Image (cartoon, rainbow, N blue to C red):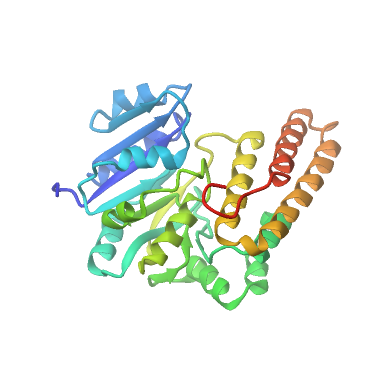
Length: 315
């Protein structure tokens, strides 16, 4: 083993505006950092090489997806823990040390993650139960329009416990899965799982990783005593690029693990896409650029929902 207890892995794609804060925070933690750049067309790579010479930079000429980039960076890591950190996520002082300590002191724990806040200190719901048809209905037809308190009230007991852990919990608590903005993973577990599932180009790799960890008897632990600040938007805010990846990954997850409800979820997604197309048409006269982007995004999502997903392996 090296003298360090964890290796941080960061994947960038046009992340020039956010990456300095993320790497400065990791520098304060005195961690080795491996950064994979997925075909940025801004100044991300030059900036990192110029200001952070200690960071190992791997450049991909094409955007191979988040999971593929993480696996490339993780190859040969010789520390006990791999720390996955988004380029728009800033770990606060001592957070990494505590996550590593928790994993090292509790053999049952394979993955640990901090409390996540936004730049204004608002707590994000980053601890979850594994997804189901009910959660898809709630998120796709409610989402940000439904206050957290109301979503908590309408949720089942176990999902309410996850909400409570995020909003007012103080002690570590075992959960199904954690959002991947900042995750500490036991390296031998990460290797045993085979790394992140590269069938997901973007999104759902974190839920899949936690599910595979649970199937190997490892706990996923939410640690609210430490914090990471996730500002969001490090790569793209274009819904025509983001939303199709999100929904394709969602349907792949259900095809692999919730085959009995896959057709219903596809129906939900298709209905949501049709509603989105209609609303985009209403928006276009007032906000032509935003309306066009949403129209393009929801059209692509609708096509994805209409595509048949295999229920085994590589949907």
